Amino acid sequence: MELMAVSNASNSDYLFVDDPTLSKLIPLLDVWSFSFPESEFAIFDCDLKCIHFKLSSFCDISSTKDFLGKKYSEFGPEFLLIEDDKFSQVLNGASFEIESNFGDRILQIRISYMKLFDQDSGLIFLAFVDRTKENIKIRNVSNFTEKQISFLKQEQSLYREIISIFNWRQEIEGKGGNKIWMQQALPNLNTSLMQGSGIGALITSLGAVFETAQKDDNNAIVPLAFMDLLEENFHVTKRLIKTMADAQIVFEGNYLNTEETSLSEAIKIVDEQVDYLDDMLQIKKQHVVMSVLKKLESPKIVISKDALKTIVREILINAMKYSPDGAEIIILYLRTDNNFIMKFINPPNYKEIENLDCKNSEEIALFQPFFRLKKAVDERYSKEEFGIGLGLPIVRKLAEDMKARVYFTVTKSNIYEKEEREVCTSLQFPMI
Image (cartoon, rainbow, N blue to C red):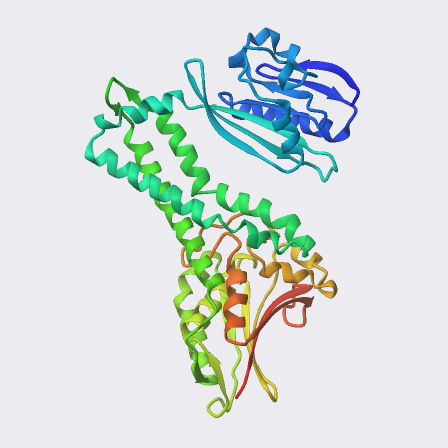
């Protein structure tokens, strides 16, 4: 790799290089540095040479540029000893996370692999977190009140729940054959978790509490407004975690309590859900129009009534969120020789949906976890049971468990006068 020049930033240094990947990486590293002013990290290329340095607590800030272009083992005795072999193993797929005493400090060290911009070669990320103060706080836990200890236990329980729920990585990796899903799903998961209220706002609230707290030896006084904000986002985050836990139960389940149901009973369930969601329709002044189907008593379908309620709610809320203000959402009931079909039709309010290549089955990605074509998160729909990109995957799973079929189409509109396209989600049940 040819090194060209050293650039100085206010709290970090990096090398300009010919590699276009690293050139694109430079602005990201600057943002990273300014966003986490207390963090300690460095980045190394595939030759184990340092290309970004922010380990200022180990050395004089004025000398940080002297470490660029060097291997970590060449940094000197003032740095924690880590062999080059550890870095080489990371390039081969390993990762390391250890805790070590270094002088009077307790450091947590992580060495991991980074791969950006679809490049063949990767980078090595070295991070240090100083746990010294944290360990001192743990030793002083005996001074906490019973209420504080109870809060800490709740917090620890929440963290354990998060870790348990996020143990979906192996299942997610198995879906990699769908290219459009892989391109969108994980970035959208990050957006879902961090945008708006919930985890992102919880972190912001914690930051505000830390900044405004007036501390003495044993206690801290925090403005009530910030405590209220913290409590609100704590409960929102717990609801988010519950959503993911409930979704995981559905995804892992393989049995529904089904029964034979007349078409009239099935349509009644849909009517009830439309009535239940009336206040959600008022958010954008939308309304639902339903067709009429005759001779409903003799044919039957096999369904779980609770599952059908969930499916209808999720499809209708999805249609509300992604239709323009004042839109008509149409429910059509059709019957063929062997099937009973419900069609939920709405006009789209964004162009991304119209670009899906249905001929090549790209619409299937809509039924994969965490997939959303639109990054904006609309949090007004309080009756949405499965948000964050999990609604349609739940619909598909429950439909398949009832031996039904769900599919999605975008076609030229034959219904809406002012719309060129229409979006249709169809549920098809075999009749008996």
